[in-house]
Length: 197
Image (cartoon, rainbow, N blue to C red; front, top):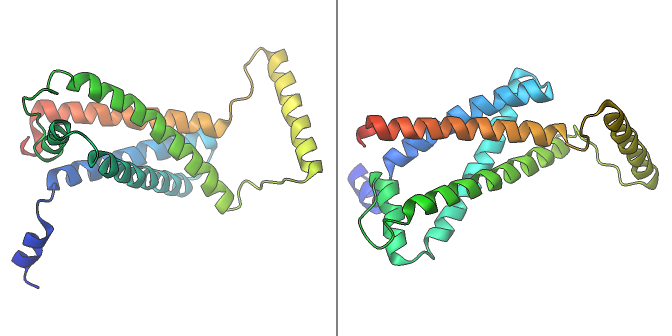
């Protein structure tokens, strides 16, 4: 099949969006790997593999959710989304004034949903790799209860707050670092007109 026929079959490809998504994904993987390595005491390679796996999972699920939700949006809002993804600008229509609030709300929701997906993905990944055995025997549950009670008592005596999982805290810090870097990069791209925008 000649390349012209292939391109006509594909239709419009958002190449700029794909390029920016790839760049932001690489930045997020590097930052999250650094945080996971430092907080969870993982090796360089292991933290990079975990960060890459979790970010690819979250990005894939995010695009699936985006494409599913975009199909059910009202026509005017859908045109705004498509124009932003393809051309990095919004059209002047009934949604134009409400878009900043919508974008901020979606960004906040995306942060927490992405955090939850990455945390669950990390737990599943650790279980899949056999690094966190889960025992459901009555003896193991009772032993786990005793350990949690002892940790809570020690934290209470030391004046610290207990009960926060180190994995959850590490993933929250990693997600916050990557979202902050992505926000800064997107602002720089929009201000400087990089990639022809």
